[in-house]
Every structure is written in structure tokens, then in C-alpha cells.
Length: 116
Image 1 (cartoon, rainbow, N blue to C red):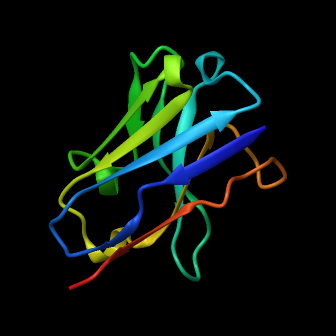
Image 2: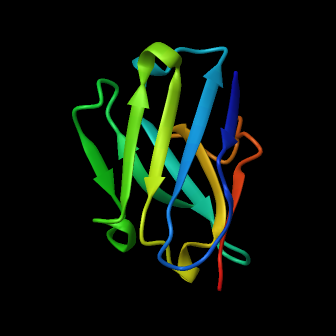
């Protein structure tokens, strides 16, 4: 199992980023997938979830209307489109199966810094 997150960076407030999560060693089409984030000094939190077929999505209140989760099962890849970024969105972003625990495999994540 391997998850490789990419697309993070340093952006100004109000700008956008698109994160990608390339999976290998398992087929994401069999799983509900999620994006999580961990800000400095805080616990990892669930940000967005997408059903295995992409038909259903859920978001934490703080990102509703700004973030969009999607997936391309043919490419075994999940995405997180982030618009109108705020400084409080600064965190390391990870993707994983919806019910992944701290004891499961996690990728290295991708750092997002929102700052002027």
C-alpha cells in the first residue's frame, strides 16, 4: 500500500490549490476515500470524504463551499480542489481510506501554507 500526496505549497489568502493523491498497492474504487489535515500542534482532522463511486461527498463545516473532493478511479487517484484559502487552512494534508486509524499506513502528506 502506498499513498503519495502532492500539490501543496505556499499561497496567499484567497488563492487556490489542487491536491492529488496517487494510490498504489490497492484499488481505491473499492473504498470511500477521505482527505485529512493536521495543523501544527493540533490533531489530524477529517476534511472531506467521497464515496467509492464518487456520487456522495461530505465536508467539515469549515471548508464547505470552498473545497471540492473528487476521484478518478481509472487513475487510482483522489483530488482536493481548495479555493478561497484561508490562513487557518494551513496544515499538512493527507489522503486515506475513510476509516483509517493512526495505526494504518499514511503517506508523507503535502504541506499547505496560506500566508500573505
